[in-house]
Image (tube, rainbow over the protein chains, first blue to last red):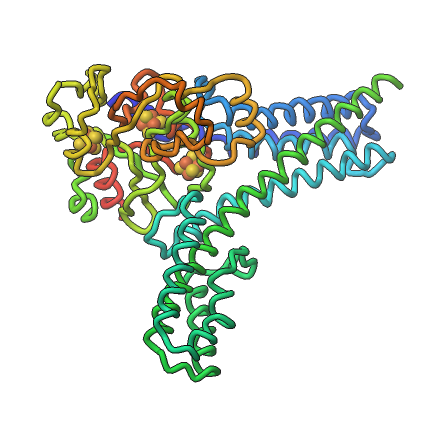
Length: 275
Length: 202
Ligand code: SF4
Ligand code: SF4
Ligand code: SF4
């Protein structure tokens, strides 16, 4: 099939790291060369060139977001764009730091550099999250995960647990209501699960419920085990959901920050040209 | 490899596989599929697991011997010269293909003529990530009338039944889902070739 051949990984992608490593090394050497020639400030010819190149690349980087929302145009695969986004991001950082001379000078320039630093750090964090979180989510899991199912499943699990508890004795029902139900009902993502293995999460849930069983002297062990299974399923959902939320939440941080940084950069350019 | 034989996907030509260890749950594959197919995603990011990491989502796999096609009473399913199996406009929505697809990859949907809204607003909402939930998949057909606006519903013409399944974006030069996956998690592969290569590499 013709399209299947197109879907094979593009050979160029494996050359991105090499290409950008070479450009970055060349730039660093040129920076060293200019330093030896004399002072290189952001106002020198070389400094302006680095600054303008950095800004142009930053604008191209922001184009990734636009490409992401254009599905009907053939503008190159999105994975290729993401690779380019990462490597151009590295190049852009080098250029901007060279432009600034690795110094904080002037209030607005320092503010801009801080914003830029934040964008770079959030980019690095994002790249790490994109690499690690899906792997953690997929590990040990034999269930597919979709956002739209999560809330419905939470409700179902609570209903099932309520049903089981209602069949038990009044004493157990009280323990269930006060100690176990709030746990099953809670939907807040657990930060302690962030880089935990799913097996560890299950272990922690089991430990907790064993403790409840011992402390309360619950006689309905079978019922407790059934509810325990539901609780573990819910915690597994929370485990995955929290991670998925983190991935989405990160975008809501990185994108506005980049927009703010680009706006400030525009003000910086206009003010330099004006004065 | 055993899973591919057990599930029967070894007999298919082009299976969509999502590598969950790289999938960042961005729903771009669904959005792209919907954007290329009148706002309705022909892909559902749920399905069976082939192994620990590879998900086989609900999307037609363009079988070697497609039972959906052979059992269609009106001959509305056909195979393109490039191998894609697709529904022609003569589909009457009888549901025979959906019953005969061994993987449950076809869904019969009520199509309303005025269902779709396109335009700049949609693009802006995508650009700033304001569209919130995923686009409707074929299985969510019954949810299309949940606006509560009774007059709008009445205004709509009587729905027409139609079979929906992945057509491998035959009107485009690329596959929306694969082309728009940022991490390369979504792959369209020939299962026999792909899993033989993996098995020999191991
Ligand atoms: S709809 Fe089902 S039977 Fe028909 S080609 Fe696709 S996977 Fe095969
Ligand atoms: S190949 Fe095209 S039609 Fe099929 S699931 Fe992907 S985007 Fe949808
Ligand atoms: S586009 Fe790729 S990464 Fe995003 S949800 Fe689909 S398969 Fe996963």
